[in-house]
Image (tube, rainbow, N blue to C red; front, side, top):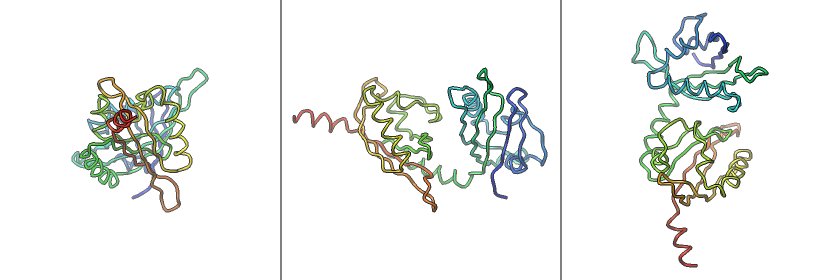
Length: 239
């Protein structure tokens, strides 16, 4: 079967209501009643803590209530069978700023994720930063080289405020340039200084292009960033 599942969570009670397709994606019989705890128990052992942290982050009004992630669901009858799920959601808040309702969608991305795994394996073999972003500009992947350079622990890119890693003088310019590219779909190419793991800023050059579907809508951004500090130093010496 194909299609997207829909879910809704009562934040105060933890009760989760699934559409028929939602139950199917989680290997649950039609009409199954479940709680948020039950949901976490269906996830792969390596995914549930990260997913729980992202859900709780969405319950903070400062996040805008947005939620987007991928995780693996375990088939209880055949634990060796995993299904990759992409989930999106939006939290609604009361006048006191407390999350009261959480709604969203889930879809099976197992085949896509297998292709993604091959892409990430290749990306980790290159010496430059390789990264991708969603159509709205939210970065959703960094290769291993990015984490080695910055000294950050490997984590969900959504939890990284990448602008704060830039030199303060570069932040407004980079934010504006990226926002314009995300809005227009034009290629992204810009130089900036990024703080390395030793606290020293180095000059980098970032380039990105968007991929569009058959209808012309942006489906993903693919970018690469290279270290140009040596070239900058050489240019300075020649002046």
